[in-house]
Length: 202
Image (spheres, rainbow, N blue to C red):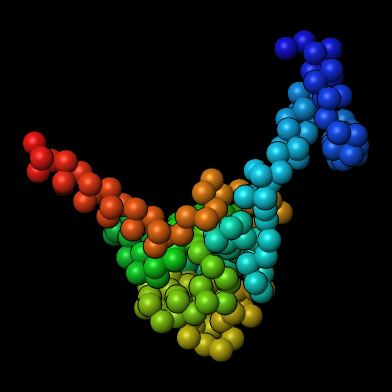
């Protein structure tokens, strides 16, 4: 599509939308402005993916929240963690016991002096941290004992410690914001049951 055609299409959006886009993206190309206008004008899409707060800290979209921390590692902390991650082949499947956990990842930064820990989960921030303490405390304490100042997952100070190092997301997108982990498991079981039924018919 030509520049003129893009400009013409952009002008078709309500003035309030165009003004918002121009104010935020004054130096952007018209193709990006047009895409931004399309997003803003799609009220249903915007409502479904609205970003709110996860409670104490962090962003939330629908039922899914995010947590990102950058933590200082103890000397040799990265080495100890690498041994553990190597032992399990980088597979942290045991964390699924938490029940609300969509994903988690560990990344070493700054020559192994810092650890990025990021995760997505269902619900509010405080209950999520409580789940770590009640469902996988040994796992959490082994991993995070390599972090400077870690108070222990059952410590009354652990939430303040996490908040100290958490960096809230400035933007957050979830493809299926209202699909919880529990609902995903339920749908998976239903699909398996349907497939078994169809297989038995044959």
